[in-house]
Length: 210
Image 1 (cartoon, helix red, strand yellow):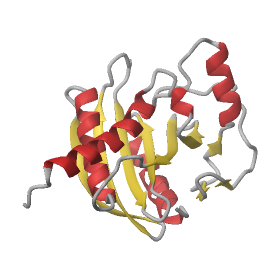
Image 2 (cartoon, rainbow, N blue to C red):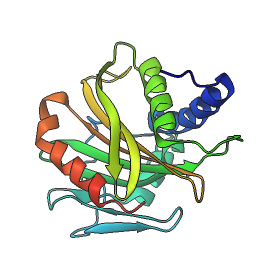
Image 3 (cartoon, rainbow, N blue to C red):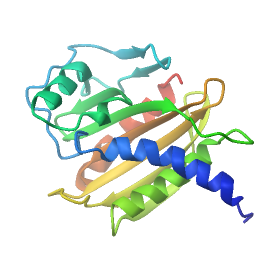
Image 4 (cartoon, helix red, strand yellow):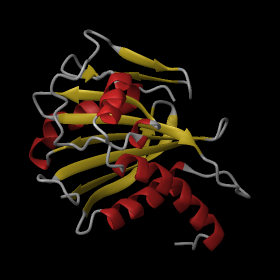
């Protein structure tokens, strides 16, 4: 396997680190978090994000889009760190499986000689998550189609620091070179319930317009 030049690897790691930190910020929800009475959009089939432009469709009627603006307001009112909401563009919740799907996006601000790739950024994110979650087990990783784009996906099982329950994290990374945007789409659920929602997540990736 060819070695990646150190400067390029460091740049990829920095970009992935930014998204990983957003996902791990204290104000961000974890898989065991039940949104409770959080407002959701009844019957909403898809979210059209304006900035950066993208479209996310719910994979089945069992999933609900949550109102991110209200959730962020509640987090700030409770004195929580709401930085995790800055990159969060959509969140779906499936109560029967206690599962969350998160869609995050932010620009790649790292100066590069060559454009980044989804695989480069995805592997850097995986490395960062393994550092942040000691003892994490990588179940699988590789290429994945996200809509019409090529992405990189990995599956990680761990008990995050401070969490009471283990989590299965399936995270896909997509880099969009025309506007330098990094997208991450992640499924978080207890490992025992992963198979109940795995196909739903695959369907969401397939139908995403990024």
